[in-house]
Image (cartoon, rainbow, N blue to C red; front, side, top):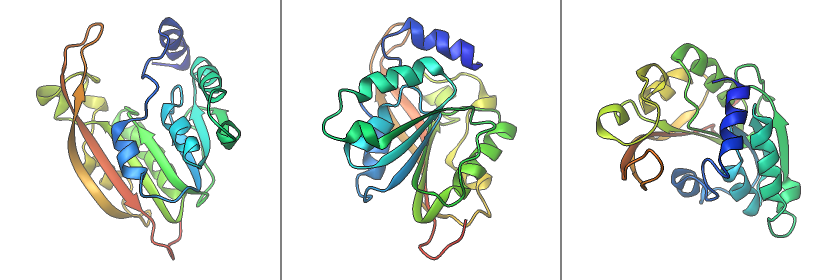
Length: 211
């Protein structure tokens, strides 16, 4: 889907992904001290807004102008100075080049691309992680096709945590955790209740490491 198709999808629904942050992002970042973060393919920014509310300065990147406009509207309701800690960037992750070593946290949640497109995006994301910083990648696991609910049904765009580790090999990051997690899925339009199988990989650049 190109940006125009995503604009249409976001226009057709009030909030495609809801207001609450992804459960794995909330869990995996809860122990991190606030710093500078990058949310790639952020959609309407639910995870970025949650991070900003916890003190993070977040660059929010997506190629849908509708999604970014909706994120700005949601940010206006944040308490205190949180909205001012968000920078909204319209860009395609396939060509976007974040600055090397600039972020204490880089988040990629449910970005599903063919492996040949995913790999350079993840490598650039890894290179953007500062010494002591974290890369967190979350998506529908390949096993979700047969064991889970929802998500893309095209195996060409699904991945495992091992795929993530292979994609970023040689970038200087160390694996903190990687595997499959099951997430409850509520019933909704065209969707039955069940469990989704997610691939979750959390990596860290050593404090003295170079990007």
